[in-house]
Image 1 (cartoon, rainbow, N blue to C red):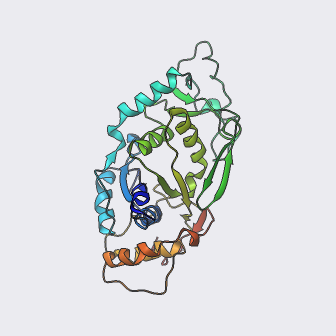
Image 2: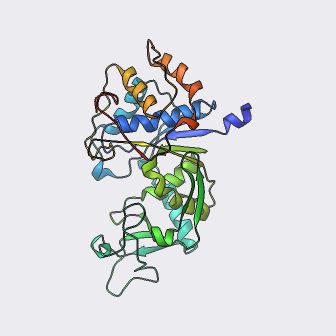
Length: 308
């Protein structure tokens, strides 16, 4: 790959501070970092702190320190979504001017009888699409979707297709509590940061068509997508802050890094390293997307995954 092509590769890691980083976070960070650095590309760090009620005190401040401990380095300043409200407001105004969004008065209770969609969420039935019912007040803003399929090719999971009207319905871009929807914020920020390659957990695969729909409506570029397997615990639950996944240990990082590397089925013959710098110098040239297991969820076993 020539230098010009390499410079066009910009990856990112975008954790939310709803708890400390854990082994599942490390898998996503490692995959996105190795994928960008293997192509001599840039790697950005973004803190997706748009949900204050769910934030864990001190989590956002701990992320850079933990990542540095595991040998990650990022390019440019850290972007925090909590400081990006004007950008999201501008995007919403652009959509509103063209009639692409509408105010919605529906609550979670109102949607309980709706069908369950592809991502396990309720499919919005279009209650407020043509205007609010008498006596109802607007709560959220929703993005209008259509019946045409959204197609894309994931670099690991292959060809994907979703019909948003059938599988999701008009989705929220600004929440009833006044906070911004994830789908809008991530699209605006990926474009603003010039992200060309989104590498993240397969649990977000079902969100990608919504983001592509927004990219098209806002006239923003579409990145390449790579959704890697996510770790699950012995109960079959994704490792996350909500399932009480243990924080990454701040002692002896090498075994945990190696476990994450092996979890992703990357080349391994029992190599030994003196420090994390040596690990990355060895690992980055050996990163191979073709070796990734093309399944969404894999069990992270205690011991092999750093004592989860």
